[in-house]
Length: 146
Image (cartoon, rainbow, N blue to C red; front, top):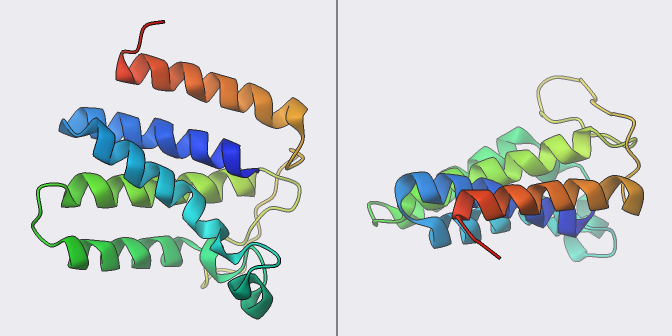
């Protein structure tokens, strides 16, 4: 999926977790970062040139490892649980969205399973409806009225 779709999913997840914990802004920020973080290996990036796209950074173990590192760094700060939970679930949403594309992903290092679906990544006909639905859900979760 494209970055806007991943970002919308991260905002929705972060808003939901943040609202539940009384820290919606923290949740939105952490969920957004988590949802786009696996794409630090984008083609053309230094990491992408070294390891390729949708390899190490698109694994559950990677997302959980970065979450554990973040938890260790944040320690017992008031925002630690909301931040890490939003980040990790945002990262997992990224993996799920990529797994339903035609390219798919191998979501774990230890099982040789490749998940792929019928959706074409980058197609406005696929991604725009998903983004609109997620934005409507975000509006509802945050209680925003227009």
